[in-house]
Length: 300
Image 1 (cartoon, rainbow, N blue to C red):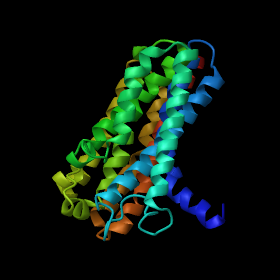
Image 2 (cartoon, rainbow, N blue to C red):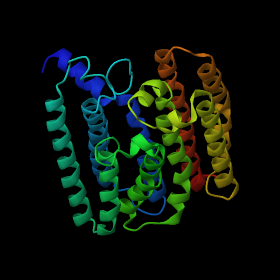
Image 3 (cartoon, rainbow, N blue to C red):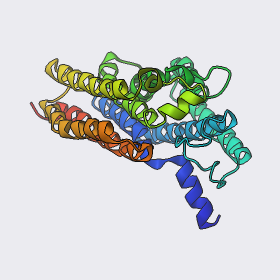
């Protein structure tokens, strides 16, 4: 495999976004580890399957958006590897099938060996959510439901699911902790749809940002993050996290910067590049929540 092809697959995989998967998995593992053995091998298998699904989802979005013309023309959505003729659609299709198959086999191994078959319907829901985000005939991402499904899958399902595999049963504690995580992941997708409002509208992709328009979408982003901060504070005050979690408020200046830049920026490529600040917000607050949960067991 030559260097250009490696770079193309790196571009297609969009590594910076994997943090959206790693944070909820790690939180579920930390909460589970506070109740008994840490089982690092189980956590490794969970990460491997989740990585495959995350990558397959990214590639499937590129593939199906290409077939439907969503990423054509002036659009800046997706990884652009098809539009830049770096990877063919047929190659993407084969890799997508391999990734889903690999994740399915790992999931079956986990459920069988650790006797957590109760996860089967939840994993089926996650698979269908991954595939039909933009794939016909459902294409729920075209109807403003992307943030809802992403928030559920990468919040409660990932956090509680990881806990379930490690401990052998579900619990309400990781569920409550997963709520701000799910909202934060949803905010990443939400922001990424703002630069493509015009091109998405032109092809009939009615994302939440398209329905709201740029100004209201930016206001919505601010309100969403206010809800996230309130949820973190509420969980902390109710005893679910160590008071270290209040450090999340230190990230407020980043939020204000995002809102200011989004309102001032008219170039959609620049607007898209500012999305890194949303990921920084998510990483910082996710890390604070994980640290606050770890400290929950060791400090008063």
